[in-house]
Image (cartoon, rainbow, N blue to C red; front, side, top):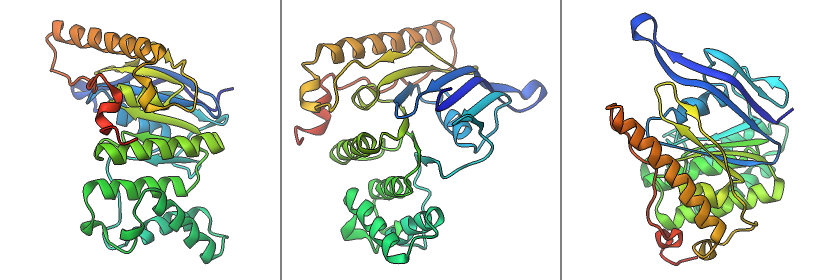
Length: 285
């Protein structure tokens, strides 16, 4: 049995004539220690899928299982890094992270917890701002606090809902590497939801497109046959990177053309540029 399984998942909102089927026949298996990325269009139902996996929502039909048990509500075993910051405005950076850590490791002494908080705050480069409150931070800094908080809880599975999209290029690249370092060290199972094809290829073992809804469903998987650890500066010359990237982009473009021909509401393609992955990081790696 897979570590995480989604079996024939449907999610519907509304009733009667106002019913909208957001997700349709979603089937997904993720093995323990695997890193999977789901790439999709804006508004395709990616966040709904994350909320189902995390237990914030219940599927209309189907079953989600984690470690062989049906998902019923949230759990510290599945840590989520959301798009938004979800920080308590009256707490400092340290206090926001500490509150989450204390909830998970309630039996640990305070000095141990404070050191754990300090380590993860430092990891995201926020030690100088550790005593500041969210209103004193930029949007990117707030997101880094959210990343530190989720990772400091040491979940068995990390679920990331486009967590790095609001960050500047250098910070985004650094956090990609930090998340990968943590994943490589502990081999925690990871699921990345992203609209950035290059990010998915750089981080994941395989990429699965989410076809846009209504009735969004998963497309074919693309395996990433690139040896780890991966080097951003070398990806542009890697034939497997180019082949995989072109195949995914071609598939996504075909989906976009299908939607256009069906005269449905316009959709926003995932990020496909720049062609040179390293360009967005300004050669600072």
